Image (tube, rainbow, N blue to C red; front, side):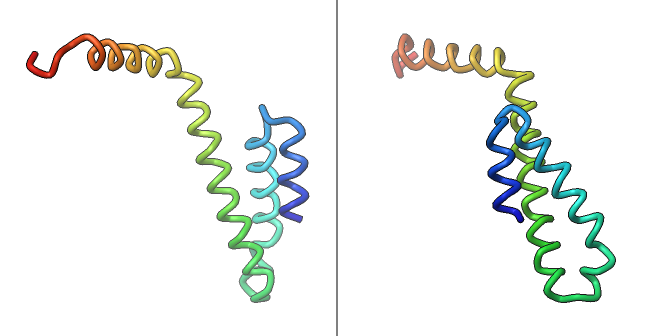
Length: 90
């Protein structure tokens, strides 16, 4: 099931993480009570939890990069100017 979710998410890369977050959250919510009783389901519940956390981290990183992309580019240009034009003695 997780492999299928990953494949479906790749069809629309812009929304892949949101798709995965929603589906992993739904999977966790539906299995919460049963995972406490059935050890086999607990394994899949934990696997979904880890995949959910990874998707959230990727999505948050993407949002941060998107919001601060120009700032990061500016910082890179400043570093390039400093490293290329300033001698070590200065």
